[in-house]
Image (cartoon, rainbow, N blue to C red; front, side, top):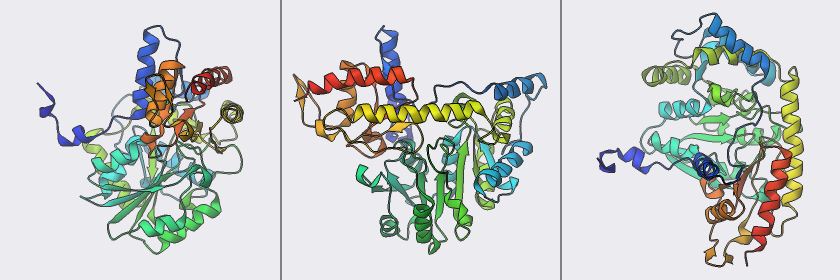
Length: 402
């Protein structure tokens, strides 16, 4: 049997570049190569003990039967309480839908609101899966380019000029994957003002890195009352609580969208795992400042960011911003495009990432995957010693390019 049996949908779909680079580095490691993998977006910390204990208790209490499709009512109420406590947002628990990770949460929303050729405005750099999700839902991505000089933030003017009669949604993240950029309250309000005149457009706000901020506070675009009824807030426990493997994400949305997502989810995954939901309940009930483990994790990311920025800035031709959140650096590496080392020529960031994996044994992710081909993504969800060693490997092999 050959690929002709497969649907056009899957044949046209790109593989996740972050997972692909992680797979490549894993293959090299299995061959005995000492690879430093700075390609995956996963905290290198373990889930806090009190959350793990809640998961264990769920097993002992036999919370192992089918859950309601949109999540346990207790968890949905806790999420609504958390949104009020941390973000000043008013949502009823009926407006909350719990899914198998924030990735499914976003896909659910897009599948529920998009028809053929509907447009979704997506600022670049974007998370790798956004355009593929839009395409899967039969929509089209309208990509807005940014650059390192603007801290990779889109302007209200860019958004306004991109709006057309086909525009159905605006999809963005803050703090951002892959750049770590964080929109301020004033910047979000200016964007919100654009959509005030377009109440038919859905704003999908991916806030999964909410707790991973180094200075100031997280702000949600849903906090502006005049557009709140247009906003779908996407979040989860993976990044903030080091719970990537528990697979719990959620949306808080206008009731009609929440009901649609529950209806859709009921037909292809049903509810998220019961044990994971009980662990997430413990996590979400914990105020962000009340867990020393979480504070220690964010402080560690802050120190690693400073270390990585300072080390990369020592390499000729590298341009960096200073990200205020998440755990990624997205340096502009275009200085090295067009350079060669023997038979190896670097034409783009994909070539550069493969070169660094082969020569320096450091796994990174090319910027093409995020819609910004001049850059590459470095995850600093690794120890300071690994980060320092990775840059020590990268520096000399870049110097060999001329």
